[in-house]
Amino acid sequence: TTTTSSSFSRSQPMLARTLECIVNESHRGTVLFHCQKGKDRTGVISMLLQAILGHSEEDMVEAYTISEQLLGPSETSSSSDSDDSNRRGLVDWTRLRGSPKKAMVDTLSWIRQNHGSVSNF
Image 1 (cartoon, rainbow, N blue to C red):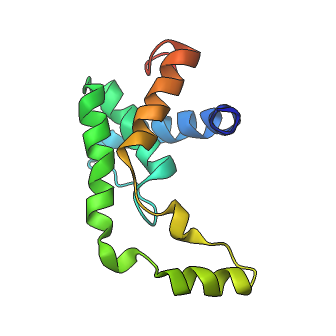
Image 2 (image 1 turned 135 degrees about the horizontal axis):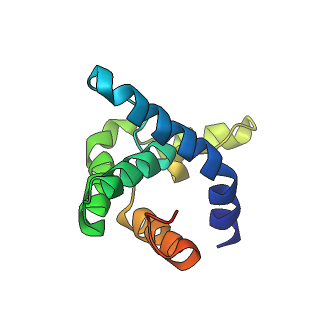
């Protein structure tokens, strides 16, 4: 989609710098990178690292969907929380929770269509 395309086009330099930093620091030992939920940009970084290490796309998708399981039910807001956020003019984050398999499948598909492979990305 256009949103995916523009997001990835804008993110490529940041993703490249992040991977370079991880590789450069790895000689010192374990490198920890994280975000609040372990998905989205962090999920893409993880996917790219897995590609560098030769993991299959199936492994990448499976690893991404683990976050969905680890987020647990306590992380999901009730519909009343969502309604309250909307009334106060805040962002309704309930639609952005989770890490569905389709999100990584679509991401990998977009990368293949636009770059030929994850390695070319």
